[in-house]
Image (cartoon, rainbow, N blue to C red; front, side, top):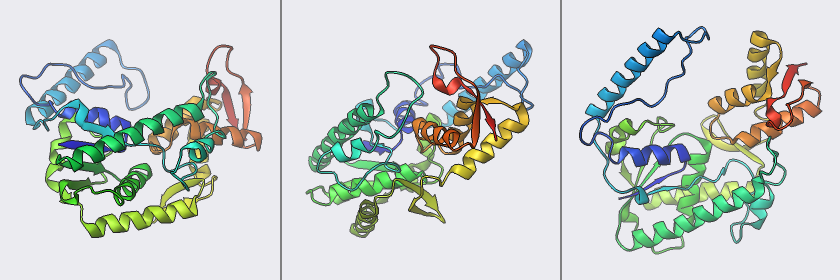
Amino acid sequence: MIEIVFNNLNQNSLKNAQKYGEGEYPGGYSFITYYNEDGSLMTESEAKEAEKKAEAEEAKRWAEATPLGGKADDVFDLSMSLNIGDISSWENLDKRVDSFADFQYDQENYEIKENERRNHEYVLEDLNTIISRVCSGEPARIWYGEGVGEILGFQWLMWNFKNTNIPIEKLVVIHSKSLLNIKPGDWYKYVDLAVPVTPEMMSIAIEQWEYHMKENAKLRAMEDGVVKGVDESYYDNLILKEAKLLSEKYGEFQENWLIGSLSDSKPELPYYWFYTRIEQLILSGTFEVTKPSDDGWPKSWKFLKLM
């Protein structure tokens, strides 16, 4: 079974889900923060208790899980940050990749444009592999949630299928708002939600994607349950809300703290999008830089004050 997702974290999680629950529980746990609810650092005894609890929960999840089966090479991630950048043409990547040149990053020697080019090339190679394998008779299961990039990814995929001889009866789709950072032990719970991809479903997805291509907004977001093109300032209120919380707690705060909070709220937007937008708000006077980052450290380690 070919597995298709539109989120890198989900790709890694689904790969783990293929053998998750198989055999004896190997021990360990996935993640804990070592901070209490009030923000204080755990004591050594509190940390050990948290680790014990986390491992017990993971062992229970392992015991209850059903392995999905398959191989790691069956899992494809087709994420390309489709909620930002030029999507008007796919005859070649130059126009889309060029649209990433305006984005900044907080570390030297990181070329967003070239990194996006490589990622897009990998995705297009994977797309050709998927089409070839499905046309050879392999079934494919498509997973996507409520993230804007995932919804657009599904529409883009259907649009790419339209001029091929791909056997639609080999395609099923699982769409659930819960498919965000899903744990390896939880994927099996959604398998029964799979429904066949129908010609009508494909037609609607293609129509929606072609609308977004024609509109070609610089930013696309979910509004009233529908993906729409929006202004670049669309998330400024969210940025200011998170900044106000940090300001009330710390006064001055590091830029990367703010970016981290925003990424938790809107994981479908890449780190560099928030960095670029915050830098624009610094230039407009919304934030003041109170302390630059030390030499050799990422620029987002500078401290800001909300004006």
